[in-house]
Length: 336
Image (cartoon, rainbow, N blue to C red; front, side, top):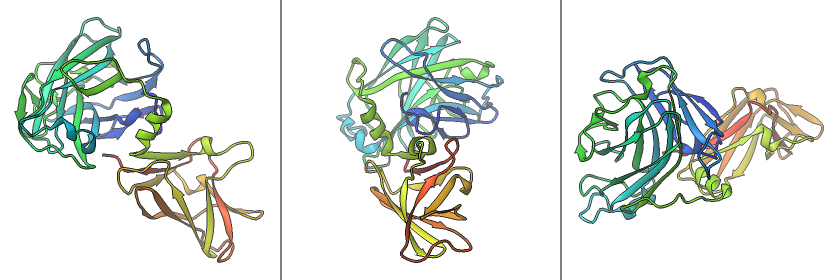
């Protein structure tokens, strides 16, 4: 839970990416949850992901609350799921909660029609515990092995009966990611649940967590999301993040190379206001009046900045700066 490109505090929506590419989701009547990066972690780990529930509410039938990790198909093709030679996997993680009892974790394919729910038990409240779950590989169903979603790992935080399945066996159905007769965290007001050190591996038993360098972990995350923020590119002399060239007096183009090849050509988003950015040329500055993505491959993109009323002339060069160190950012997303 050390990579936090998108931030360190979130309020859940239907599906929202948070730390380390973990997505939190909830649907009515379950209330919104808060997700934060915490330094409360077991020995050997620096950070954890904390879920804090809102006002307690039963998911009844159609509600849900889930934390999920999507694994790219190209990273799980060797599991041979959907064939007679499907391999057993071990899921291991550290968890802590204000509640005790039997909880559910599941895996499913992207089609949502093959799933296996298993259980783990939290024995002591507010105490870090290490858990392992062993799942025999699925010999049926369709499991993608391309750059789409190969499988989901779901932690049931409050899944309604429409999405619950019996634990301990592969099940065919639709949209299944919860476990029957397990603790539903979101039924309790201000309940807490922490997670770190999740590992999924081919094995009939879990092995110690594979600690990768921060740089390697960041690069792996940037395959799906790459974000440039003001407080990283700006220093005492206000550094820019890209060179801009005038197409005419009102249009500027920039190209950016991504630090790693992304999963697919990404979409782009930016901070709350165009005033977060400045175009600089010679001794003049101007706020853009438009900003768009002209096109993007897996490796680079071309962006277009507009300035109504004109600024500079064709062939001139300048640079683009993120002027707001607090809220300014530009992000490229090719998430699963």
